[in-house]
Length: 124
Image 1: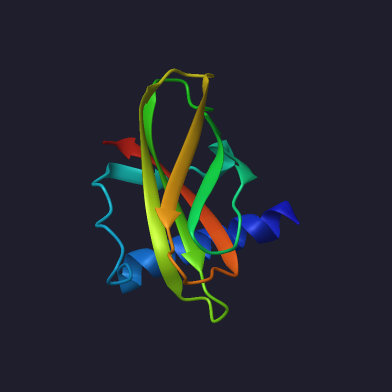
Image 2: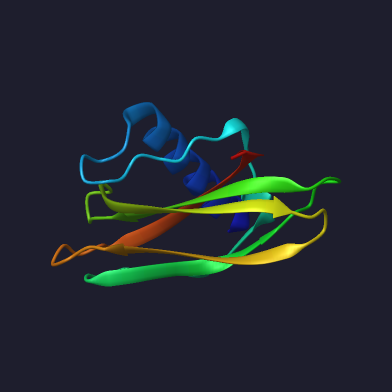
């Protein structure tokens, strides 16, 4: 199950990078030397719905040195199209340390059927 979730998250992150973000989404923060760090990601909540939604969890730096992380949350409609995105920048996470994160977006009356989260490690 975890492998399937990781594959879906990685595929959605790649699709977002290749296709660009939805017109209503803010531009993604810049990450230099970014690598997929989904193994360092814990998702506590990523709700579907409408109105203001918040996704939250934690990042645990499994590397041997401090690093920066970018959490990218996307809320998807029933067709799998991104209807809202949010980012959380986390700088200077010490090796072995865990840091909580949260990211919110206001979907208004649009309704998200699902939520996905991707994590990139690099230099912010």
